[in-house]
Length: 490
RNA sequence: GGCGACGUGGCGAAGUGGCCUAACGCAGCGGUCUGCAAAACCGCCAUCACCGGUUCGAAUCCGGUCGUCGCCUCCA
Image 1 (tube, rainbow, N blue to C red):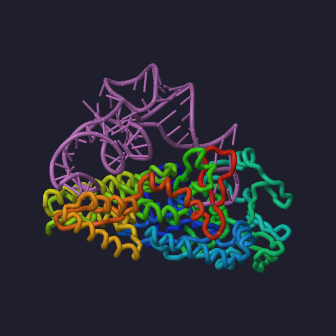
Image 2: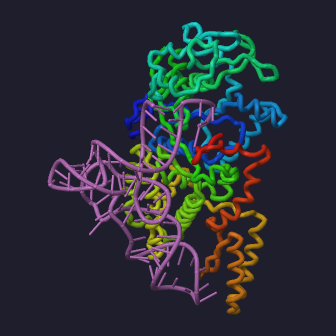
Image 3: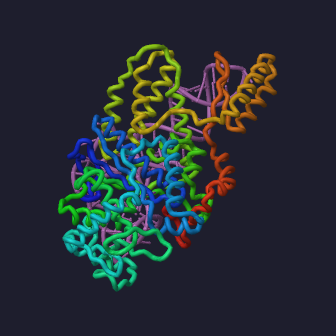
């Protein structure tokens, strides 16, 4: 398949050298709740992994948690809990949300705090090669040591200095030198090291974890575009400096950022929607459709309209994936559809086109159902390809408590209809709809299902969900002032 | 200032030289079905920011204009 490679800035054939394919995706810092931007990244790489496996390749995926850094410390301090407590709590939440999103677990989920030894080994190795130096309890990486520093982000050290606001630090040999090890400050978590007590710098954990779990050269490394510089640039510098092997990663894959819509939204705290809230309002398939409807390298703008449309689309697929058909495969050309799907996905993971194939299959299924034709093979293919995209085609859960009462109302309404008391029967139906339950009458009786959210219902719900988005950990960080349209920030 | 992306129907979004009078989804409109609905089905709804050029032929290539956005700082 062709995959865009950030390193070469063009689409290239993806030719993994390892079996299983070694794949590393930068995870999150578990200091606050996940939002839709995180969902975008994790869904994209979940789909890439599923697609590779569907193509018959084995994949070894590592997805890390960076559970120690300044934000972790600050947050834990504010909450009055320890950093490990904060990490444990947030990682639990993430993993619960990942499960609901139908994200397949990685093979390894390393945590920075459990990889200190490996990090120190790498730091020590870099010092030995004079690619790093200790200074007053800190250790810095020498950006002038690699001959090609800046190759991933496509910029020179001069450019970086010109544009960046560099804080003065006389300990550094070069202003862009970055920290590998931070000397401990009072009250902060610290580990012993040859350079004194301290904690790892931001980038070193990923080098250490990738090296430890995947080896010196890996096939694919993923993450959000915002990580290209400095995080991934520095990861390359550290890893290649340490091993002496290049390239550290043959294929770098980055997803574009999710953005907030208009000014109003960016200024308003309540509109930065959490993953929890998104899951509750639009369902896992709805969220996936929203993200997969665009290409992973194009920025995606959050809007309630789009999410509602995606949730409706998910409902359409779900209904088609659950149609009742006569037995038999039918004569629809499923191989053509399968090939179309593969062609789309092979072209730099073109999920918008892949999704179009699923909708065409859904259409064919509905036609078959209308005509009373068999289409078992079409149904099987829809479910199979849906699986590659991580779609489940399951109804959002209706509270188990409510179900018996809904059944009861449906039955009461049946009696009213039998008695031709249509006005009352319709009243029951309307009232249920107002509560998010759709009734469908047919010859075989009445079915009910949870309604996809309407724009009105979402808008009505959102002011109230500001509090929900706030969660037990305090409010999500407000968007910075002075920007018209902000990237969702964590 | 440096690096980069983008502008396609009411909305989202594919398509990067002829199969495009432009996929797919949402919304809308007309019809079928239905007690009425819902779902589904049938049908309808764009000439691709603007200007100029290249070409037998351009949404797709080149130049210009206008507009939008991202990264360069913690960030998926």
